[in-house]
Length: 276
Image (cartoon, rainbow, N blue to C red; front, side, top):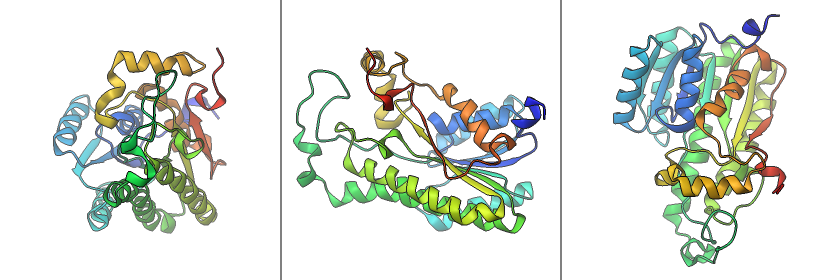
């Protein structure tokens, strides 16, 4: 098979939650730039309108809808609408997620870190815990459920969950609920992969390390933060949404037809430890 055919998403019908910025927008772009028909779901009406207009202006087949993934009934309606608009649903990225808030240590890496009382376990509020779990884990569950309803009857589908390096390793600078939500999403992905494999539906996860997105108030756009993080990454640089596109196309395309239940780190080697 030719490489162009192996990685082709031409004519495929896709949906991305949290698709109007950051990694989600990168997924939307990767799919649409290569001929897929894509529905972008996001909680921000402004970003949905802006990015849908920009991409359709470039000739991409993209539609957008404002949806909060914690509203499962609204999410179901949006997924149903996407499938109705396209006649089917081939690819779903369960990507929507939120900032974890501070952990029990200040800073990200290197020297100058100190205990942070605001992020301590005994100070963790129910509201903060439940909000992160509701979006980062329950929202993934609801997205997978909606996708399965459309994919199982057709006996085909590609589902990709955005987890995190935080599902595999601990990071004291990140709030505990984020760790739990991403680890839960990873195990949910594996269970869904086991259940849906007989229907030729693959379910996999992308586990990003430090990427420059708007999460956490956009602190990752700060060049000083990027320089600090780059020192801890063996490749000596941080990630950008563009770095995600190749892996996204692999998991969405026939190239990954025999891959399911995999959680693939994309982190410049950060999980491996510090090299120099």
